[in-house]
Amino acid sequence: MSEEIRVPLVQPGSRPELAALERSIMAARGRISPLYQALLNSPPIAGGWEKLLTAVRNQTAVPPSLRELVILRVAVLNRASFEFDAHVPRALEVGLPQSKIEAVRNWQPGRGHDKAFDAFDDDERLVLELADAMTRDIEVPDALIDRVRARFDARGIVEVVATVAAYNMVSRFLVAINLVHRP
Image 1 (spheres, rainbow, N blue to C red):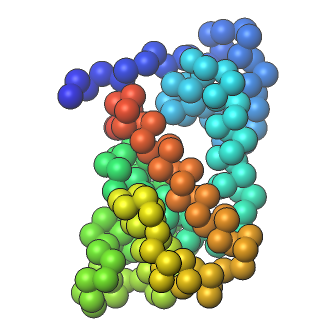
Image 2 (cartoon, helix red, strand yellow):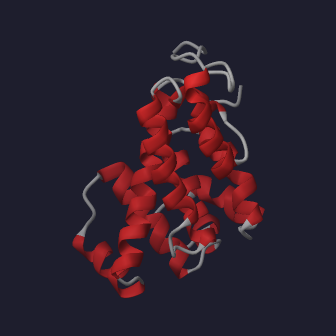
């Protein structure tokens, strides 16, 4: 596969018609990352994306460390190194230790106790298992959903499932346009 990014990156400030959208992205993100520079090729997609991902990242009741763990795992499964690298600082910021960040690369659900399995607590293993099922198999087994229901209320279920789904969208977009490493 070519090393080249498959869409042009829109340089912030280069298109006056995007000024309001760029201000909105800056307000929510603090910068316009290469991901958003790619998305700005379609203002409706960039705007909708920003609203959805801001809700998932900043407005849910999912504990931030579980959210970041899910995001990192989905990035690993989808080979989205750009997304993984982008979320490591956030994961550290919300208290996820470096040891868990490294262990998420080698997580194997149901593999029994090993170093990667033992690095995580029950809630972390549950959301990692959900991320793997949703990302790899699409269909989530009833037994796993029953365990998710036992841990989360209806809002929590929607929010943790939406987090996995949203970051599958992000990582698959990044891989498809070949934005896999930080430019």
